[in-house]
Length: 52
Image 1: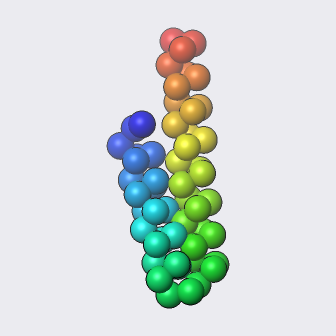
Image 2: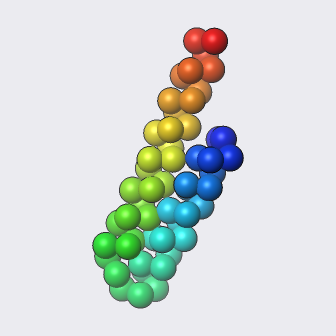
């Protein structure tokens, strides 16, 4: 996982945790979405590497 994707993933986990603690479902879901985006970017990067 690239550093940028790892930062996005960590930020998402932080948001998700904050949302759970505060009971804010919107922040929790936003964190989950950020983690999913990081995973998709990582997968796309791996596909690019295969075709280099």
